[in-house]
Image (tube, rainbow over all chains, first blue to last red; front, side, top):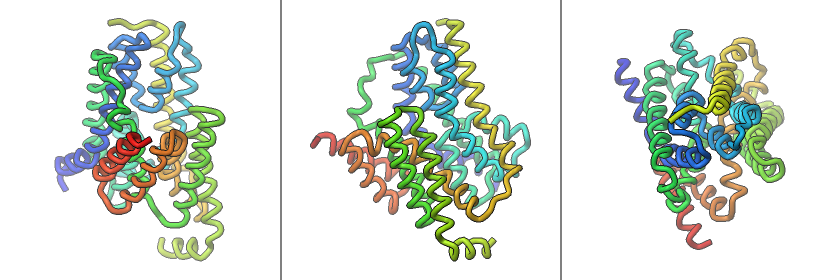
Length: 237
Length: 99
């Protein structure tokens, strides 16, 4: 497959997620402007941090004077999941040069990472496919957060259009793509319950860490309780 | 249009820690030799993270969101990505009207 075709494939896989992220970009820009961030600062945050969840949490916490350390710590916690994500993706980046890895991973987000994992299960992950996903995805996020910052509160409440639920729906659909039977069922149950409980009891951003680690623990336990399947899986390798 | 020095410091700090989490896996993955059980846990990373991110929205917001999430999960077994999103958004709008 040519580089161009492969990049186009990346675009055709990412665009539903890109569209789903657009209302959030607008909302993020509008909320940030409401907290007194200048359009330039909004643009810098979207371009340099590029992490929706962490950016929303940061804008929520933004105050005067700026709580610099608290903002950085919250960002680190929410994005700690990226360590697991990039560790899982790293062995699949064989076709990337070191520079392509370091540049490409700068814009690794939940959506393009999940699509890359999905692609790697079928076919080798290529730089063309990866950059075909992230260039339009990042451009969309930047454009929408800028428009949001400029247009501000005129947008109204995205809940009216159910737009806030689009991310939930996308993540559920992506989870289905990773389904591997019983072990996944335990993973999803543990991650969901632990995350929701932690969210209620401790609040964000702890729910992501607690949910992800509980899901991993559940997979570990469920896989151990199933020696035959593990042996069979090993034999296939 | 301008940069407040403290705001700039916060944004740059957020950018640095975020990038570190994104490249940390490159250093980690080479050192990992996994048992079958650890491999199963590793394979569970994608669904565990995705569900942990959305669980508050799906389970701790209200019954319309919880039921819509269940409908979305059902749709995810048969439809492509955009179809799943359409079903999810449509059902949450409908259920919120009833609620």
